[in-house]
Amino acid sequence: MAPEPPLLSMSGITKSFPGVRALDGVDLDVQAGEVHCLLGQNGAGKSTLIKVLAGAHQPDTGTIRWRGEEVTLRSPIAAMRLGIATIYQELDLVEHLSVAENVHLGHEPTAAGFVVRGKAAKASTAALLKRLGHPEVDPGRLVGDLSAAQQQIVSMARALSHDVRLIVMDEPSAALDPDEVDHLFRIVADLTADGVAVVYISHRLEEIRRIGDRVTVLKDGRAVARGLPAESTPTRDVVALMTGRNVEYVFPERPTAPPAAEPVLSVRGLARHGEFAPLDLEVRPGEIVGLAGLVGSGRSEILETVYGARKASAGQVLVDGRPLRPGSVRAAVRAGLGLAPEERKAQALLMLESVTRNVSVSAMSRFSRGGWIDRGAELGAARKATRELSLRPDNPSVPVRTLSGGNQQKAVLARWLLRGCRVLLLDEPTRGVDVGARAELYAVIRRLADEGLAVLLVSSEVPEVLGLADRVLVLREGRVVHEAPARELDEPRVLDLVMEGSPAS
Image 1 (tube, rainbow, N blue to C red):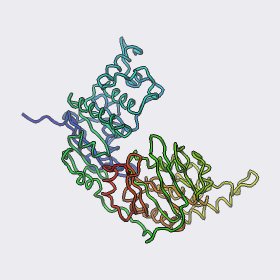
Image 2 (tube, one colour):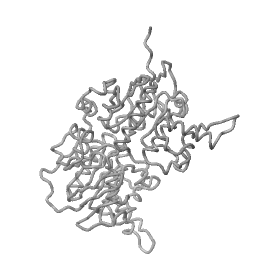
Image 3 (cartoon, one colour):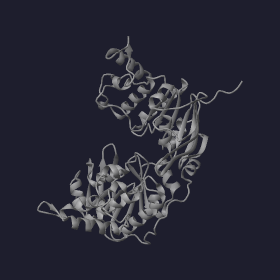
Image 4 (tube, rainbow, N blue to C red):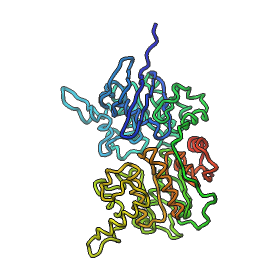
């Protein structure tokens, strides 16, 4: 008798976006009733692969077989009709609707051709919540009033409201405490005992060993290992598979000795409830300090809190020993802080405006007199700032949307140079920048530090942090677990710390 085919088989899946090959011939097979873990660093292709599986992205090439038959997943609805449900890390629930309304959203119960609301929907939802071990959740309660763990249970109930045979869970434990994680694992065990397959994505290798059956590792859009035994594969082997990469980073030389000046930026006991624990750090003029950690470790939240875009629940930020007003971007900018955010197109750039206006927007008072803007002075200052960074094309009148990713980032940096900032906060400085332009940005950042700027850097690329920073703070689940000069660290060591480390005492 021929063996049963896998529940799911993805073969030779490729997917490209402008300038990026996100998936490059990926194979994945999942058996009914197993927990198949998907591992890889940020940017490895995990999110793209599960969006292909969910019907949100269409592959460029490759085949998908479901129960042995080739299928085309043209939309999330098509995937759901087959029995494939996806629970994303950022839960897509509607906060102002009730639990029952969210669970049945898009496939409300019907009778005689009419949508049935009220008791029928609530009763169906209550049965699903009981199956998931959470009968205390009220089906009539607004989702926005629930805890993170309860909202995740609602997402699982919504998946089970269909005839689901495979559930994709993307970082499901990121917002859960240990007891809630234990309960999640009991639910997963019950589902797989009923023959439901689970594709489980997590950065926490200890979870993979506890819950997983097999592991597929992605790196740079390729499956570098398939079907590894989750429980017995050593952590070091998994880390080596995740980090082995072609050389694509060319870093400038860092100073041989650390700066001796007094700190320009001091962070004392800074904390934000639910995002990161009390943190101390200092950055001196001419120094680059890197924050290394995985998604959910609090890296970006720390940067935004230092900048005043988020209000701290404890602690303070000081510039030259003077505390900043908490939660005030204006106070931070006046004190000399500048932020290049992760999502520069949405958060930093005026995409329909010229390079000149994007560069000058934080220093407009320099060019305005009596309500009039001196366009010549504005253009001249923008041209000087962009030339210092070798921004191309050398024409600040062009719309910023026409620039490459690397040159758009230079426009953001030029803005803060023109403003005269003293502390530069960089969040994912090379996100969306091609390999060739990275070296240019690295050289620019190093030069700015050498000229006296204090730089606080966040990057999901561990080699980037280690190659650029003078000193590194390693974060895990909102806490600093290690601090050391970058020269004393390597990539496997940092990944060991962020995945397996325990908070520093």
